[in-house]
Length: 551
Ligand SMILES: O=P(O)(O)OC[C@H]1O[C@H](O)[C@H](O)[C@@H](O)[C@@H]1O
Image (cartoon, rainbow, N blue to C red):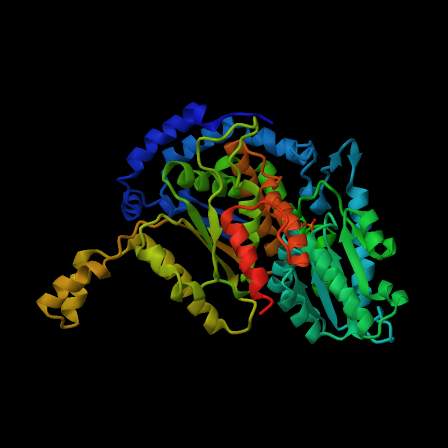
């Protein structure tokens, strides 16, 4: 992989100059000036439409961004990742989640001199056998009853992926099985879940790459204690506790038989692990065939990434336009707005995907970067968001590029709802771009019979500046396949942005310090006595808590 400081490239400097010109652009004028703009700035792929035309970009912008990507070695980086090289250098690991979905075509999956396709296949078969049994009532609990509830215990990538996807695909799900996700170390999470399930008919999937994560281990131990309290015996654990992990030793220590362990590998990053055995709840919910469709959707995007030229390459365009906003137009944030209730956790999923990957301030040489890296990512489904935070998108002071996502066909049977949903989607992207001028506002107020005084007072508040950029992504329908594709697009976007920012996107050292300090403080809370030096505020907080909890 190349190691280029992007700001030292000619393309970067040209983009900086170009950004000055962009200050005067009005999106609606760009459309007036070029009646082919929509066609030129949108991509059709596999029945999808990805419309970038409502972004503050011109041909020149994209040309310069392409130059930047070239000089930063985006193609070499893709080859290195797909070639199984140890591109996660700070953890000395390959980044090979693409191997988990490489079941079609001729491409090998070689890392460390080994083609891992066989290993991946073997785990898939094990998942298939288990999930088939649970789905067909062949897997019985200790009292001989079929399983009714699946509880996934995991956090971060071992939670958000299966949570988001099982939610997204529930319309394709098993009619009887219920799914629960416990992540937070707050005892309320496991307690409220255990209240709803019956030990005789529940399986627990303890999902943790490392099998050392405090939250997950605490929840897993509580679940096992509860299981015994409910009448389960140690010999019944094998029927009720599964593990998904890379760490066989820790799984054994916990008391889960390796027979009940679904393996994955250190070349799968936590936030990219839903394609691995971490996706077990997904397979149980939708079945093996549909899980394979999910992988296939992602594989299609992998092929697209590898083959499509820059301007036709959806992840590359998403990445490039994102960089344009962050580094040249000053955006601090971006929103993901699925007009698809099934994708309610999609923004949260890519909040982790994005912010844990590209929330970095040190480049690949260990030097502090002097440019902005990953933005703040957030979002909620539409139309709910419209009645909550859209105000800031329309009339706030910040630039918030938004992705609008929707299925062309609904999954739910109510067509009239879908038309209303999409009318809102289109209207919002239009309103954000077109805005409303003072003249229009005055006209409207006059027509409503407002007095001249009222018009003068009210007009400024009712003006919409417009010119707010959006990307619209329309997929044929939310299915396992399209969901797989959608996730893979965002994954590759994150990766390519990290390449240009010259950062390591696949580690997450930033979450370590809090964990370490929590481990130092925990004994103090357990003992009820402060033993360590803390700052004044932290000491004050702990002291207050220790006293107050006794009252
Ligand atoms: O799967 P685990 O090893 O339990 O890790 C769970 C999560 O916690 C870590 O702290 C990381 O921030 C996440 O990237 C990871 O997904």
